[in-house]
Image 1 (cartoon, one colour):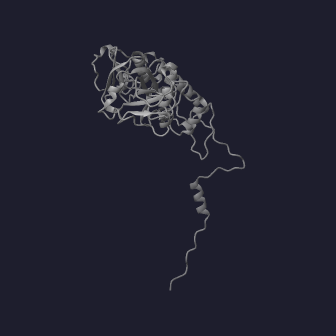
Image 2 (tube, helix red, strand yellow):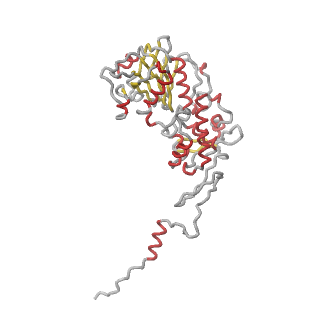
Length: 403
């Protein structure tokens, strides 16, 4: 599934080639109700968003009129958050409010979605398929591409297509009211649109995007949240309500750099574990977005570059640049890649009272809670029941004989 890097790359492509241009043609395949889950265009205002995620617009704006409604509008901004990205359109739109009405095309790639721009090469390649074997120049361009879900053309001749072979992606058409205008500055308008999108479905369920310093939690908040969870740390990273945009390979990379086993439970992490995890979560997210997911620009020490190997077909495991063997384990239904020699699973005590952690914790070592001289160990409920039964005298048998 496309993650932060791929989404950042797609958003950059759209911003570079479409921002500031007018739409001359927009052709969505609205018969596909899976990719286009809404049965009407939706309008949201600040007051309405507090009541319901979506609100029906006026009767004149129906799905069948989307193509006509968007023609002539200008693409004024492109934004992203986690695995979602969007284009903001502005033009003459009827509005009974003094605020400006902006159209938003909100997109999610799902498993196989992508944005293609005609005659524009890209380094994009689904990372989970392994190393790329052919360049973009070696692949003959067919237009429109197969599995196209919508096409968009600009007045200067640019052509864009959203494709999705497996139809797991989503495209939504939203109308957002804002008291900000382009005159206030593109950054001000972009921030206001994003803030309003985060109040409604589906972005209202997304957590912080750690590639953006103004979006992510600080270390104290991160520590508080992760200590309340009792899940494998890999599952925590993949939870979009906690770490928006993190996917399978990024989660593995963060854990590898943090020297944490994917199956390690969050409540068993020490303070230093959490600090290291937070640091690598921020750094991997920022670098992945900066490089737009281009593996050619990743550090050689990253696990990502050694996840796959031709040796796997013969049963051998890949080897990292430092010579460590790579192995795999399934966590939360996802295959996790890790280095057993560096990412060791720490054992935990199954006591009634939680153990105390040493920040210099090593494999299999934990400081058990110390009992005072006057206190006795707590008995389990099963042991207490057995003790009570043994202390209870047996009932007297009726020795009276029958006559």
